[in-house]
Length: 257
Image (cartoon, rainbow, N blue to C red; front, side):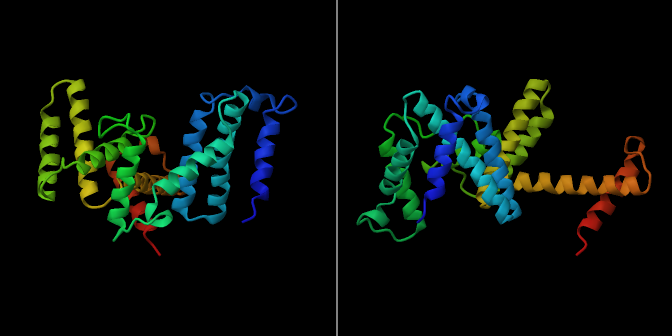
């Protein structure tokens, strides 16, 4: 496999961080650009969702840039470099795939995942709780999914889906009976957490599901704005009936082949 361009971009980042490079790049630290990692990762996910191959290629490059920048910052500080990052990653991949790189036998994907978890646990003996290792920087919805899945792995689970549905209904009742804003906030969070578990029972990724709903709402709302402009309607002056009419028309129009 040709790695010429990988070497070139590593050198480019090195130059940008050098004395004769870019003042902005030289001024950056791990903390000043940490938000870029999240932003670029989400943009890559957007491209994947859109199945836009050229866009995926571009956004993966932006994600790679963040990796290279952090590695170069660390190298400049005498901590580690991109070779160390690649070495640790390669070592981890080989260790966690003994069914490929060793003589471990597996029957199915479930056994592969089970081995992965076991090996990961061996690698990180400092983790005492099943819930250790969950990122504190990811969205609350993604954290809820991780917490739920990790708890389930040690047996903390409902007996059936009906119990999960009952839990959702109970949480809604508790929300409706809450008296203070703090209590309402807490109970609403419990509703969301219960719904995340319901999604898990159906094999649905709650984060992806919400992203799809957000995209659907945005598409329909933009269509309403388009209709309103054509008919010279002022959105701020519409009543509830007019809004509903616009929503139904936008919904119907978007569903057209």
